[in-house]
Image (cartoon, rainbow, N blue to C red; front, side, top):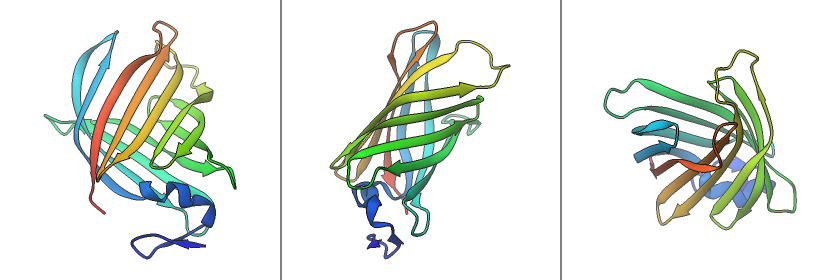
Length: 167
């Protein structure tokens, strides 16, 4: 058992991820991709340990910056292999995709990439093949960069956003 900066207790295995715990609100997000027009967006990211279990519950809620219209939603869990820096994101997305991303955490930075992906039979194209995500704490700013590959495009940067901690 370990204790975070807010006094919340969490499983010892999660210590390497404790810098991520809390609620984060974006300062600015940019979306780009070869097959769509560039856009800006806002997002709230929440990463919280699940009691004393060795798992982190996370959710990402994004909306159009200019209209507050909801955009993407993502919910899932982060697991860490005990006594290693190996991590896994298990995620469900609003567009009918579920995925397992695996990677590593080093200090206050983590990178994961798709290992398994599933989609509903009636999803519209293009088909997402790979997602690579990096989360990095720089001072008191959290940065997330997401790359995506589809059946129509190579792996390209898709999202870049920074957050400030609000809770």
